[in-house]
Length: 119
Image (tube, rainbow, N blue to C red; front, side, top):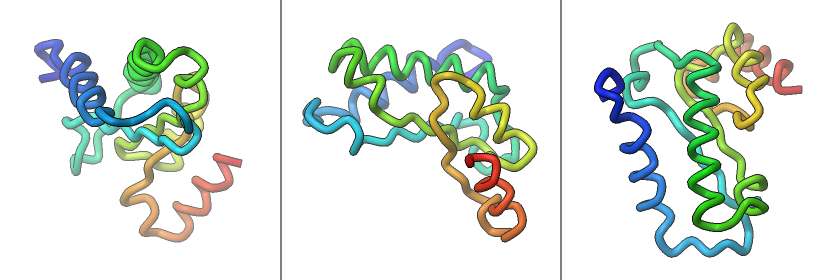
């Protein structure tokens, strides 16, 4: 899917379908977590730039549906093999608001390192 250039339309179609019935009255209560399908269970992760491109597209889709103010208040998390080595770079991206941590949360030192990075 990624190699065929279908990741963006596929992801945005899933996102918009999942938002049916969501009203734009409490964007701070909406959290969107994105993990590339090719990263699930593989230990692979997107580059910070790839994650940013998808998160930017997600925020743009939210703005088109609900308005810019709503889109800017929604938290968009990245969830593809977040770990202490890549988390700071991911968080440096303007549209990556945090991480959905999986396996890295199973080891105390790793999880504590993530918390320190998140500040």
